[in-house]
Length: 225
Image (cartoon, rainbow, N blue to C red):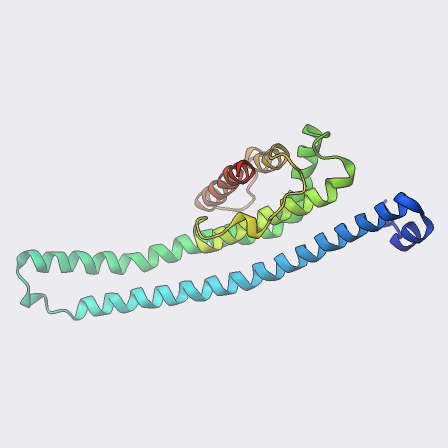
């Protein structure tokens, strides 16, 4: 049976002293977190479109390079130069198709994760809070779930960009709700260890696993700084 959400107006207006102030502050924090989630979701979709456009431009440029190489008259080159030209043309012809395949696998993994994200967040957070109940008290569990959702958004964007270097983790979770990295790492590690990847291919699973593993490393690094 679904629980009815608390009526914040009754809580705030009907309370007095420190209790009323605490309720008001709690509501403000929750509202702020929810607005941040909406912003990140909007930004995620915008970045997906931008990345797809950039990759399309890159593929077009590679195709143009192939055609340019083909136009070079191999007869005007010596034997070594002609051999190098043939090798360059061969590599350039294969590279766009390989890039497109890798890009497709990464994007498929990202889309799959985005679809599974609500269930994954719920499951991962439940596992982490059971393991570290003192580090994740009841009053911080909703915000903790929001942090995990944002971390998975980071994974999706990294997959769309084909790497993790240019995507700052702090742009998604600037100040973690929990002061210890252990619950966050436990949540993400659970998703990796349960080894359930649905209909993803072996290569798509590999890409997703690699970025999830990199996420645990980045979280550890962020807490050390």
